Length: 176
Image 1 (spheres, rainbow, N blue to C red):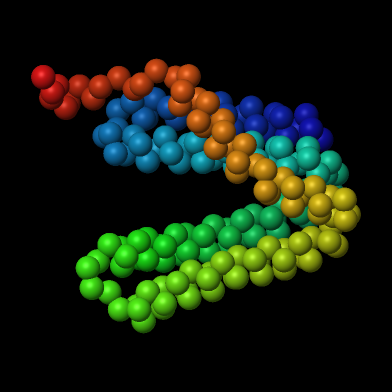
Image 2 (cartoon, rainbow, N blue to C red; image 1 turned 120 degrees about the vertical axis):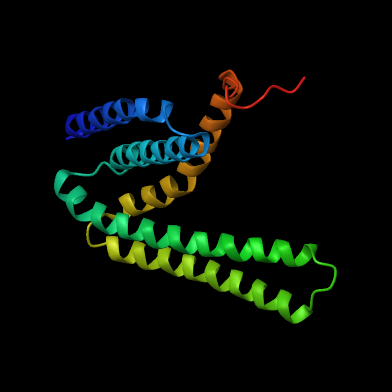
């Protein structure tokens, strides 16, 4: 089973590298967006692979678990985006000279509501997958969900410090 997932991972990574040539000919903003999308896809692929290993999923479990997991991830991503939007609103409000307490409270309440919705989604998901996963696997899932984003951030930070800065954009004039 792991060999199958490894082959899928290798195929997907090869596909991503093949698409890399399109990045070279696109505009800087488009290039950035495409690189970001590719990076997100790679992270998702590695996440599935590592999650399969961490939970020691059988093929049968994986077939039942991952559709539920993808729906869960989508809902959490949407809620997090809505919460981030509200937090940006809150930041903008705090930078205004005259803002009412009522406006601030309204946005704070919305942020808290979204936080509670995220908590409830996670709780409902754990309950839903108990029919597919053992208690040990659910515990490993909770640990994985907590550690994986942190580990990805650490790896990105390490790569930023190791890799040389990108070459200057030839279309942009040099500052002398």
